Amino acid sequence: MAKSGLRALGATAALAAIAFSAGCGDGPDVAALDVTPRGWDTLVVTLRFENRDILGRPSRAVPGSVAYTVFSSAYDTLYAGPDSVIAVPDARLGDAEAILVEGCGEFAGDHVCEQHTVFASPKRVWSGIDVEYPSDQEYSRGGYRTLPVVERRVFAGDDWEELPGAPVPPMIAHVRVAGSVEEGVTIPIRVAG
Image (tube, rainbow, N blue to C red; front, side, top):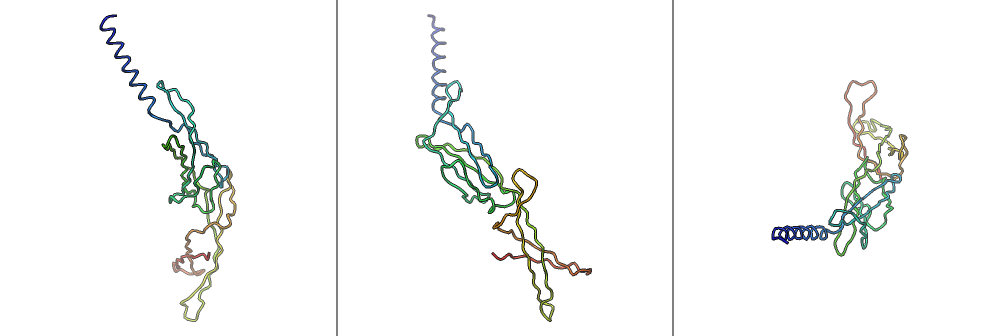
């Protein structure tokens, strides 16, 4: 064999060794993290991992364990554990609040993770207000009564449903005397809880 042929063979072997070492040292990756809402209060998570050989062909990778963490938009932990069917406290969350789902697999002491964002239900608040003014002889005091109702959009629908026990966000009411030309007054509404 000629020297140029040996050099070419040596160069090819060196490139193959580099490719082999680069392809084998990467470890597993997340192939897919799918998050499917099953109603507003439940998420179903599917997490798959894969290895790739030196030619880039994928093969399934099986982690030693998996863990899921679900965060609110304020990064409060809503769930942490191994279950892939996860209860979400949608009533506690804000209007279409972003929810971050993180799935991790453990491989020989290394954690491989991926994140996915979904959203809480659209919500709205409505309330009537009964204002009593004045409530004293000096016209310096008044009072109000209100019963706010929090609703959320029906999952996969256009209707709204009442959401008992949901926190009521801060509200204000703009109140004027009927028939008055005055601008009225803005009242911050506190809800007893």
